[in-house]
Image 1 (cartoon, one colour):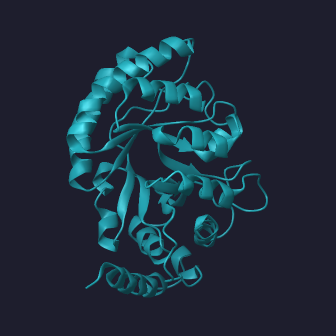
Image 2 (tube, one colour):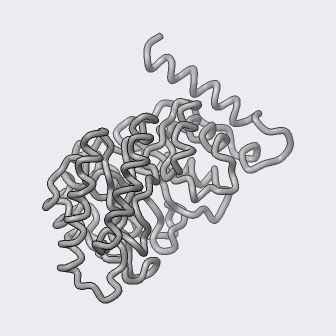
Image 3 (cartoon, one colour):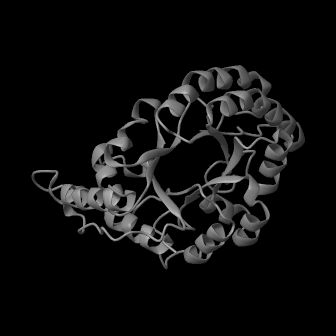
Length: 291
């Protein structure tokens, strides 16, 4: 069976499942009928698991597949293989890569982060998970220069693990103005400086559009200038990290077209907190970003 035909059949099957899986009322059963129309394919879209914690993962996978998503972001190792049941993949995994508050900018954290990746990156590779996440950590009195040097050293320790298994480690860019006070990797220039020094195709940045709009704006020019080092994207409305709609300030179709124009072949994962029916909001975001 041709691949496009196989996926079409799968999408139709999942659309029926999305409407009939549960007996009685539920978030999934209340969602609007899922589209089975093919997406343009210029942006490979995913959805972050933590934003939909009230929906069981299997049900989220069913709905995600039925509206043309390609994966689920930010799953734990024990969840890596679940999306495969529905023609999806885990597009970004947790793999023991430290924490937002305790990351690579301090030498004393390197051994534990390395041990986590040595344990879980092989599992990610086996499950077809292409990406795993890590963090810089907080400044907490550390200069940006010293933090950058330490982070480079840490990522160089991790580089062979990532390269040997064909899994890309992504350090996330987060805002330190609203959500993560003191976080060090809070500007694209700092993150790019670090990954450039490591210089590996398996060490990149997770460019969170919500966070970088808060910190620096100038999204399209920044994405164009640094495309080589941006391996994954997250969405979220500014302000508030809610729906991608006319209550907030980012021109999402414009940003998506800019990402596509760079030749980007990775994933854009929706990571906003819905304020309305969550699956309706997710589908609207997918439609908006399908440029």
